[in-house]
Length: 309
Ligand SMILES: C[S@@+](CC[C@H](N)C(=O)[O-])C[C@H]1O[C@@H](n2cnc3c(N)ncnc32)[C@H](O)[C@@H]1O
Image 1: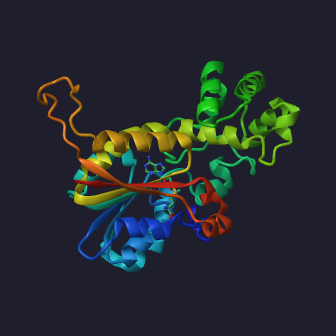
Image 2: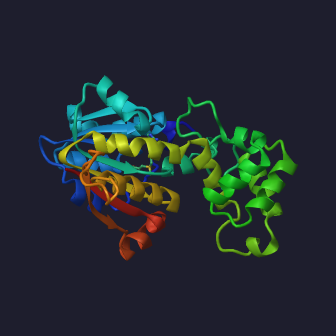
């Protein structure tokens, strides 16, 4: 199934009202949606008469986003690429400082619900999970080639998988694994009986961990956040929605570092570091109960907003 056949896929934009309230898009303002996906947030920014640049590393998503936002004409432009390279991409497009940037992290419904993309344990497909289909590394490489210790680390860190050792052992013993169904079956067989009785599918955390590793999602965040803060006009805002505790931790740390002024020891008579705060934190929001009931995917979301000084 290609992009054209999945046009009916919807992705409910998470904390839309809160994002728009924080970014306050308006006529004459220029905004980057660095994870445009199916364009839900970008559409609301454009409806508020902002000029919007939609960036995504997934070409299929960008195609659907283009179709959805066509009615806004030249007010919306599209860039294929990784937000961690936003400086180069925006320079190349002749775009300077911005009034607002949104990063809505993680995977989209399009990716999860397109069986052959290999993101979901619910469909049988080759082990792929690449957000950018031109990228070389796939899930198959990680599952079949990464050493046991590295598998344990990603299962534990990215999947918060308490049976990381058992699952990694099972995966290594079952190699080569070719499909999502083979991986999911291996996990079900490797997980202790009490793990199989949990409400969530036993493969859920492993698939999340492998996806984060395939797409270097945490590296992208570490590299992309400082670039995003540096790209804002004074008073411009960066809004980031995280779904994972590791993402949240990185965002909190990067915002706090940028908000900190002089870092000289208190014993120094005067500042020698010359560091001044470049941003202030605006706040942190969680989805309302109504939103999590309507869109369970939003349940783990945390929105953090910082403003350039
Ligand atoms: C949660 S979805 C965004 C949904 C979007 N806000 C909407 O309302 O439809 C996340 C999107 O971010 C994209 N993405 C993830 N990491 C990226 C990166 N480093 N650079 C660019 N796009 C990325 C994914 O391909 C996916 O389409």
